[in-house]
Length: 264
Image (cartoon, rainbow, N blue to C red; front, side, top):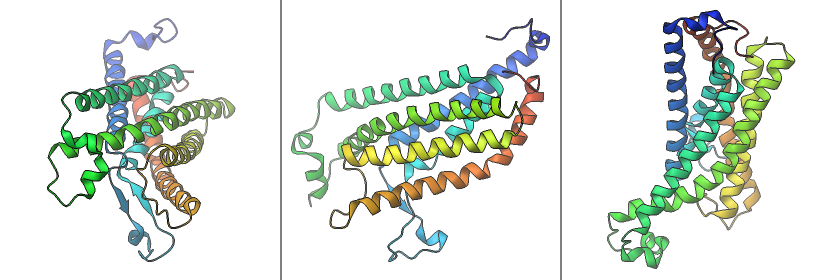
């Protein structure tokens, strides 16, 4: 809660309203992106090798799960919230994100458990390999199958990475005495996303069959390629969002009526 005694400007209803609206916008963007990336998750892998000068026949490929695309925005949102609203609110947003994904898993489970079609008992993979016409319900059950595995894996990685992100952000903020905004933005994001990318790929491989792994080839190099592809994408986006984060923070501090050192 805000303390009007410590910050007299808090009594201005306009600023209080703006703060809550901006918080809801940042939190909503975070939660929406998080839920979307876990539902889409590993439903499709995109080969972007040609865009960075690699041929499709090369042993090194740049492959991304479609769920990775909106993921960097979640770290930008938590950095904004950490900087403008403090560590407690940032951690609160992270916990609510976990709850929302558990809610999605529950709805997927319930939707699949109620009056399931006959083909589910035969196994989804058998239906996919069949030459017969695939039922329309298959789309739901296929996404359900992928989402369960991907969400469980990403939630473990998510908790580790987001709390690492928030912790490092505030550690660097204290270390630099509130200066070097670019350092805590990039430092927290780059380390936490390495944790997330490595964890989600390894857990997904160990507990699901959702990764495009060729079992006839060595598995470890393929896993490292997927980790490197995902992390490289997140690394580039993290570096690119430094400028909008710095200028966005300056603008929002004035717009929200916050002091330079608020919140602590």
